[in-house]
Image (tube, rainbow, N blue to C red; front, side):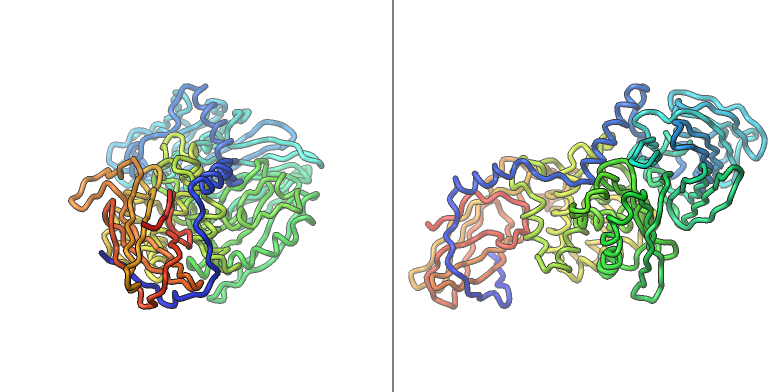
Length: 593
């Protein structure tokens, strides 16, 4: 049986008796009321409202996965969106100009997702009026004559109406007046503008917002401003990179700003601009000042911030969490108004999304952990770098309830029609799965693979298969079992261990048994598949004089006995499985034979 001794592992420490089974159970049960991430709570609430609205309308939540344009006949190249709204009046006027490219010769129409809440005022193709047809929350625009393969066309759709309850745009009041802010993830973009509402379909986006005097409109990218009549102003926001429709944002309020700058390691200087309600601005000076460090640490870990050519900042919004709109994260007003609330993890989480979710987007909603697990692990990596707390220790302490079928009990692969249903799995188990992958491939290969993955899929979409392929390419390892057991499979490994020192004290026999009742899920069968977990397991051997040795056992069987040499030839006081908290597990007991 294989084992490894960690360099520099002979340490001095006080002898600590292992906890009893009943004590461990008491601790785990007390942690069952597990802290839920601010973002996941807010997104689940928003999703519940969206799903209810869609059910009421009698339509499915999501369309099936597809390549860009192939199931509709044309690909969206760009959206030029013009909105007119007064936050004091619950109504929206809009015009969406779409530049499209036909996928095949003979494309006769394009069907777009669009809420029935709005009245169509005018539909044009190449500047000529056409008659569009409507079915439930869809609008179909005809092409006459049909488009040839790769032929371009411009569609213009003007509309007016009251945004539906539970949709993207929320009108709300605050201490000094009115505001209107958006949150479209996952299925809400269709309630703001006509679009292909699918995460795999990316396009260039420009947002124009005409607002009354005293209001400011904020969105992604860089802004220009044009004055109008009666104090109106039109704000035009343009992002140079393509994004999926759920990341399009619209925020209108009497915002004031905080300004700062960030200089990248390559010497590029970028503005940091945040938009706050007047009553919130001074409460968030320190938080805003912290963005430079957040950007510096994550850029060092992941590569250059993806939107160095525009900006970063936050904008005050209506919901009680965060949303990773590109270059301008939305953060809930109730959080920003509380100066005593530590928002560091939330703010770093949203910044992490700029790489993982915005620059590279999951291709289908069942892979939402590629967004949320990555952003959660970004928090952990940030704290590891800034505070020195090892990532495994922090994950175990702050992100895991320790329960076999607790908050992290579901598969990391989500429901495509309800992706935030089990947020503990996609956020926390998703983050834990990345940490365990890091421990398998090593730090150098892990961070080099992240850069390969982000470069390969930059401004595009990816799947868990793409992630695995990148890690296998860099590490040279077959990672099918790892991805199957931690991504595809619910629950976690459950361990028991016994140990016995030899009479001469020159070796230690350690037997580890996996006692979980579930089998590993293997969506695609292979000869190397195992129904139990295959994983490195760190074991701390504690000696009677207080010194310690850490070894790594390579678990490959359900029950394994390892012979660990003890050159110290000292009495063994006990062993601890996974002392660094690097493994998602339940330890039932460790005991001397």
